[in-house]
Image 1 (cartoon, rainbow, N blue to C red):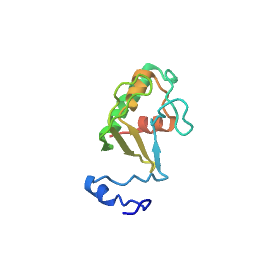
Image 2 (cartoon, rainbow, N blue to C red):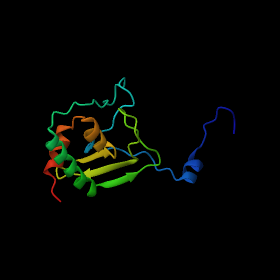
Image 3 (cartoon, rainbow, N blue to C red):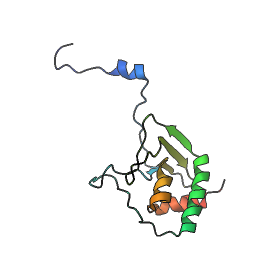
Image 4 (cartoon, rainbow, N blue to C red):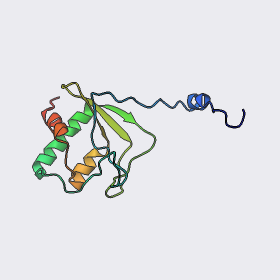
Length: 135
């Protein structure tokens, strides 16, 4: 191989069986994916105690979210996420939930932690979808 020539990584990718990056459709809504720090311009940073829900509303949402998770497609990853607020390990899965409105809501395993332990505000559209869910 000549210096400066393009490198063909196809053999390496095939060897390690790395899937291609997922293409996100217009009908996919990502919830609870946070920036790594508060200086990001592209993703939100979680804000503690930003929720206006009562404890009973929050607990009902979390119960409903457990039901949604049971009906969701799960993607398992090799790495893991850490909480942007308290730095605890926050899981290595993403949930894909196809709602009746035709949208697929994607949220990470640690999303519940942000709501339960840090009282982070819940996206209103997602809140409504989860609360209306029936098994």
